[in-house]
Length: 604
Image 1 (cartoon, rainbow, N blue to C red):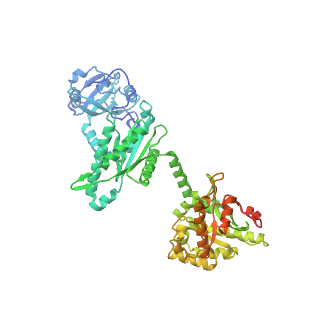
Image 2: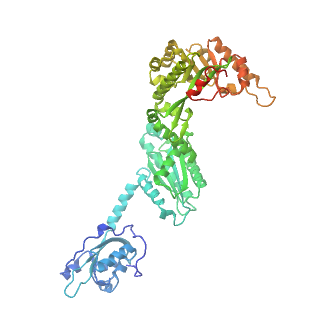
Image 3: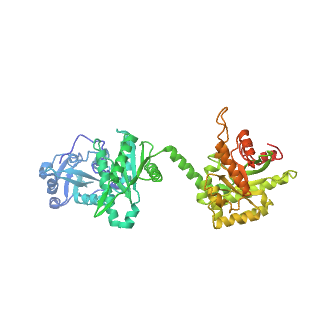
């Protein structure tokens, strides 16, 4: 057996094991062997070693294990014979047992027999009881555990590999990923970077549903072969190929250690897509599939396995959302927006309860006399982390999770209460109406008619001083319950306005059958009214279109409000073609309730 006598080397144990606390027990003394015959006949390889570490005696089994006669081993260093000096900790523990300061040593070593074959051995060193002339030293025993190690290796392979594709599974993948992110893995050389391609087959569930799981498994195995081939080609000129693993279902991952940058990962992702796009022939079934891939590449330092996988999962979702059959690179800015959106969504409902919302009001001004006719209530979220947020940051989220219903009730009640307060504070002025935006989900998921009736009764606001705004796309296709609700509100005396008119269905024939009282022209029409430059007249076609819409609305008994009025020239042209009211920065930006009080009775 080849060992070394040059002292301890600062290296890991050959099998990854080292002396543990469980290997060290309280000191005890063993009785010396009383039967020489038993020592010689024992099937377990044993040797008596003196306090200097020299073999004093060895039994035949020990000699057979090392390929030498027992008498030839006498006088040799035991540590060299069984490789006890290959790591510092084991060597120290062995020396402590020799000196009588430690009770026992047990470790595993891979030993090489003179005939060339290797074996795994469990080595145990225990003190021997001394006699009147002193202690003979320690008993060293060696047990062949090769078969047990091989069984353990086979079991571990089965535990760490996917039975369908024979690829490493999720457990082994994360084990390798975690190891690659340990500082000692990237600080001793290499690029210090790591890359990941997270792949998911598009529409794989349809294969299982239509052709069965057996064909689905064959497809997964075939995909695994192509991914492995791509990985081998990518690693041809490198120290190692990317690790290919099946994480579960139709999800695969390729881990690139010591990556050289995003270009390398992009090339790998392109090759993966092309490999999968080629048709598959599976037991008479010819099929084509595609995949979506999320690609992440970054410095290993400061990266965690969880963080890397979250980034890859997010990027894979982007690839799916962007149309599938593509790869997408992780974008920190896009991810920050997503995280912000998620943070807003998770705190929306509590924010309503905490009263973090407030209303601002933008004037609606009569085009003929420039006097205040009404206001539009606009929601603002005074977020403790992100500051003041406008509706475009959170209204869609509120509609998606249903919190628009309680939020809408709060807006309605607050706006009506404020409108009534203005009326009480300015009894000599004509009362102004308040316009409140309503989402379609409020109509479907709540009793909007009952909510409005209750709010008007509680605040004392007359129905004709409340206007509800719905988008054109929501109103023009209304039928059933939404249409009934709009009709009931109109019958109650509440005004119904179509917001952003001209951008949706524009079903003018259907418009005459809706209980609508106001059209709000989208700002894109009004912006076309402004002069493009000094001495350059506006496009007359814009005026023709808007004038036709206003005339049609008037013939249907509707009034028209123009949004986004920013210049006096725009106001003059709108007034000339008969527009009723205007809204925009020419008159005022959205302001607080007290600012509206200052505008009442004032001509714009």
